[in-house]
Structure formats: structure tokens, C-alpha cells
Length: 175
Image (cartoon, rainbow, N blue to C red; front, side, top):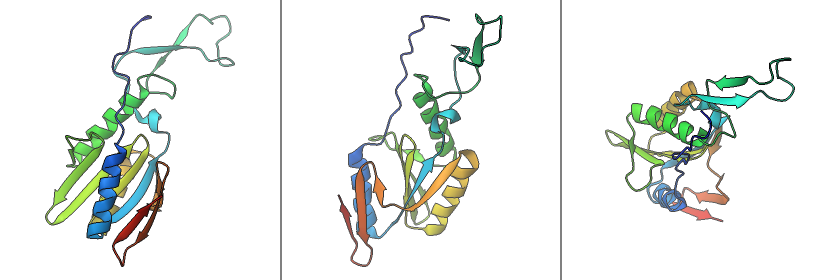
């Protein structure tokens, strides 16, 4: 339908204050902190409403230029794509047993015995924080099984912040 106003087109992103606080926990308790990136983020979203687009230039069927294409998946450029991506991600992560923070909807945590894990999402950038390397490794495998992910290793740079760490002294610097 033409003329529909999409009210829910936003997607939450992690608060930089939450990231800084979590990095202070990393330094204070000598937690592991790793980073992943979601490839083709907005293509993972599933559309909730029927959506049509004009035929793309160069791909239009001759003699049928008035026809439109019905989308089955989210695309870059759609106003609802960020929201659809976040919804799919949040549903998956909660299915893994993570709880969403009430203060920051892109901060998730999970307790497994004495192990604590945090996951922070900023659109397609993700920090994985915890006190057990094996559990973080399992989380990376689970995320990669659902989404096309790129492992970036130990976190050195995120959201314009350069991170330097001295694990022996339990210190961390942000620039």
C-alpha cells in the first residue's frame, strides 16, 4: 500500500556510557573482551509487512515496467531495516539465555554458574565480554551459526575509541 507511515523505524544502539562502564569492568576484573562484526547486517532482517519496490533500473522487464517487486527480506535503504535487524538479533540472543538490560536495550548479560557474559551491540559491531574464554568461544560459534560474522579478535578499537590494555596491571586506556 502506498502512503503507509512507518512509525517504528528506529533501532536501538548501545549507549557509549554502557560500553565505557563495561570496559571498566574488563580492566577491574581482568575479563576477556573480544569484538565481532556482523556482515551485511540489514539483510538479516525479516519484514513484518508486505513491502514492494519499483523494478530496478537495468532489471526492469521489458513491456512490464509498471510492475513492482515484492520483497521477501529486508534491504539496505528500507526505513524499517534497522528495526527488523535488531528484532531478529534480540530474539536470537534471548533464545541463547541472555537477558536484556533494562537501562540499555543493546546490552545483554548471562550468568552460567560463576561465569558472567556480556554482549553489547552497536548496529553491526559487537563486544563479547566475560570471565571464561571457552564460553565466549561458544558464543562466537553460536552467533556465527545464525549470522554472517567477522571475528575481529581482542578489542582494540570501537566507535571511534582506541583501546589499549595492560592486563598485568589491570589497566585500560581509551583514546
